[in-house]
Every structure is written in C-alpha cells, then in structure tokens.
Length: 314
Image 1 (cartoon, rainbow, N blue to C red):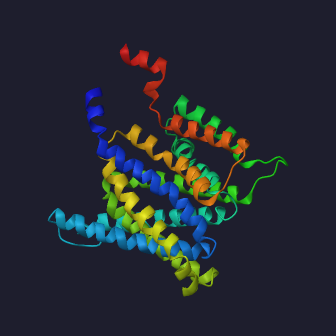
Image 2 (image 1 turned 180 degrees about the vertical axis):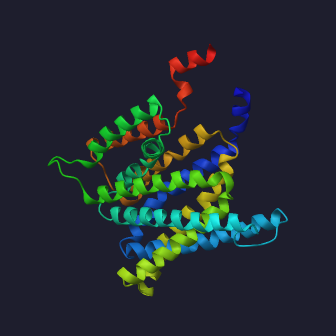
Image 3 (image 1 turned 120 degrees about the vertical axis):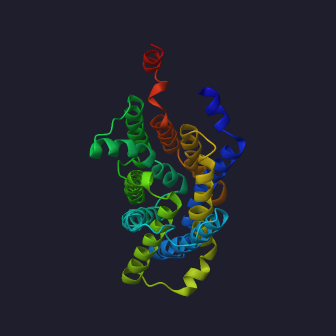
C-alpha cells in the first residue's frame, strides 16, 4: 500500500500542483492591482468570462481526444444534464459571492493576509460538514480549528482591538468557498468534474454580468486599463491552474495534493512582499504561521495520530 502511494506521488504531479499553488497565490496580486482600476463585479465578470471560454475549449479538446461527440454538457442523459445545470447554478452563485467578497476585501487588506484568510476554507470545510451533515471530524481537525482561531486573532485584530473590514469580507469569502466545495463534493460522484466546473463558471459569469449592470457602471476604458490583471486571474488562475489541479491530483495522493496546494497562501504572502512591497508586522506573520499549521493539521489523515496507529496495528 505504501509503495503504491509513493509511486503515485510522481514528479510531474508534484510539479503541476506546485505550479497551480504558485499561480493561485500570485493571482492575489492581479486581484489587488486590477481592483485599483476596475470595480469588483466588473473585474469578476471579465475574469469568469475568460475562464469560461478557456475551459470550454479544454472540454472540446478532451472530447476530441477521447473520440466523443462535441457538446456543451458532454452528455445526452436528461437527468445528468439537469443535475449539471442545477449544480452549476448553485455552485456558480456561491462562487460569485465568494469571489466578490474576496475582491472587495483585498482592496482594504494586504495580499498576504488575504491569501491566508482565504485559505481558511480548508479548515472550515470539515467544520461545516460536521455542523450541517454531522460528518465526523478528527481530533487533528478540531486542533486545527483552535489554532486557526488563534491565528486569525493575530492576523486581524490590531493594537486598538479593532478589525479591518477587508479581513471581514475575506473571511466571508472563505466561508462561501467552503460551502461551494462541500456542495461540489455532493455532486462530483455522479457528475463529470470538468463539465460541472464549466457550468459553474457559466452560472458565475451570468450572475456577475447581471449584478455588474445593476450595481456598477462598467466602462471599456477601465477594463482596457486592467486587462493584464483580468487576463491573469481569468486565464491563468481560473483556467490553467484548475486544469493543472485536475491532472496533478491524478498523480499524487490526496493528502500530499492538498498540502502542496496549501502553499497558495505562502506564495500570496511572498509575492505581496516582493512585487507590491506590502510588509507585515511580526504580529501578523505569527498569525499567518499559525493558520498555515492549522491548514496542514486539517488535512492530515486521522491514522497519523499515535493512538490510531496502534489501533490499526492491533
């Protein structure tokens, strides 16, 4: 069993997932820079529109390579189509709210803090699963929740015991991402993962477009000014990185894959410091370190606990 897991952790899989985490981490830079010239809903509409086109092209290429008939939903089964459309709309709504609150939040906080607070979804998923579905949560995960709460205190609470509104928006975003992941998990067993992602992006794009027209005044001049951050966030972060994740996870064990992708927050912190000159206090860096430890603990299998190992041996 151990040999099979080692064999599955190939260099190509590790490389693709590391590159995926790097792209996601540096995408916070694109969001921060783009947010200075493009309003949040407009930025997210353009981003999701580009990602939808990219992923649709990928679906067509995969269908052609597999010798399947080219189609939007990839199936003729009406029940499967309905499940994809319903799932895409619900996941799209959650993703739209998540990216909106994240985009607003990053205007008022640093790239590094945004990266670490967003990554809390990895801790929140098992907690929400427990609260809503009574799905068992391990002792390591509960420990991760406690450490994450302490880390959030050091990240968000300043000397005057007040909290930055950008951090609040980003924390809401983390909850939305966690909810979206849980719902996807319920659908993915009987659904084409890439097609579900495509319908989700279509739903997100439609919602962002409607909300943009209702609450913002988009101009072509602002979109043109922010085209580079939009393109990076749309094509690289939402398009290429997602594809790297799919293929990378096929060549890595789930535990290693999730740990590698946790590096997203570290890349966000590093890129914010190197590219934007955003420095953090020791108080905040200590909090980020605690959150990173919590993220790792939340993903470790319960079998790694000494008393569980003894049970397995017996």
